[in-house]
Image (tube, rainbow, N blue to C red; front, side):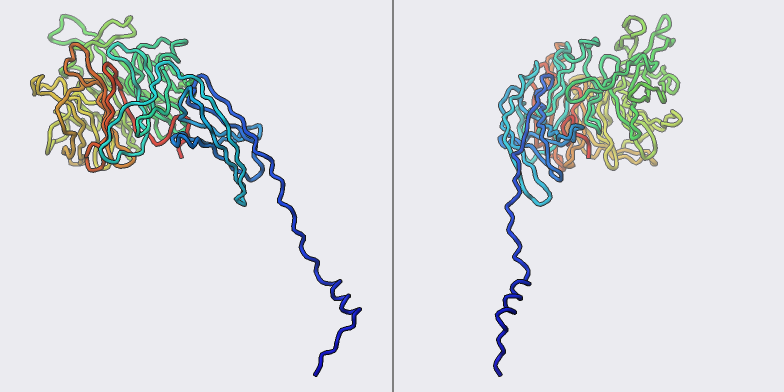
Length: 491
């Protein structure tokens, strides 16, 4: 059967009714990415790249020649996006690549030349490090100054290669308004990226550009002085160590002695006092340690010397039971205090409430940190009443604690050639499960005050994998492993 042919008119009609072909449109015209840079003379290691993005676009800025430079985004009220670069080398030419992407994956990019301003006085571009294994990727945040005459104090953050990624001279920044003569103590990188620390009796918070965000004088909190350490509580308030003086009579003294004890004060960043604790209300000043007769200046008496009964140097907080741990150097004690009542819960150390089942106790300790099942402590080891001076040595130890049973065991300690670091120091855990140990001032002749600081990182097995030796007469009081640079917010 043959098929009937459609009339020519019908064929034309069918063709006319068919859907027209979808036209191929040219791709949208994408404007070149417009970028500009802003630098900061007061902080040459930070620069801003400003870019105006299309809706749905995100952007990043990198310096291919230096992968250690980090960038973060911030939306500006003007509608621009700020790409802040951190870790730049000062006085250097940087070729920055800016890349913008939209939801479809389309990319726009631009190159930008950024000349960072000259370095701030005292800047060190990098420190020599020796590695023997796989050190962690943490940054190291520390203070550094000339010692024993405190000068050129500054905050540094270095990467695992020893390259400086952040530098801020502290004394230079604060002497314009405040007298500065002491070591900047207890530096902490806060969740918002600012730096908190104590300096010459007062509390400070600086932003990454060195601007004072908060300044709380000790006198505003009703305490004589703030010293050695400050920590931030989960509530956002701060705890700091303060000085407290009272006249105490001793059988071997002809009259009342001016004795320096310690206090703890809790306060807000704007200076509101929330809680306080005073050692004279909870401890017996008749119980004196080896260093009692060292002097501590009393600011209420024009810095006239008093006896240095406690010399506390560190604070820890336990959210699990709302307790505070105070490191009391001159009593060789870690003191646990109930935050609510101020009651002493226990004393950890020689002559305290714990039985040491293995190892030897710390003496004149610094820089403790809670770790699972126990605590890390830097044992300065000097002024040990049970050892001759020539037998004393410094070390970091890890104690396993059974608090209900009041038992402790030394389960790890640093080894190697014996040495003495009589001041400062800390032992903090790294994000890789190791321990970063700071020896604040290693010296063979304390009377001549000749020595230097050293930092050693140990991996999770206890093997030293990273060492930084500072030059002579340079001391660091505290070194903290951190995973971000100042200015970067916590995740």
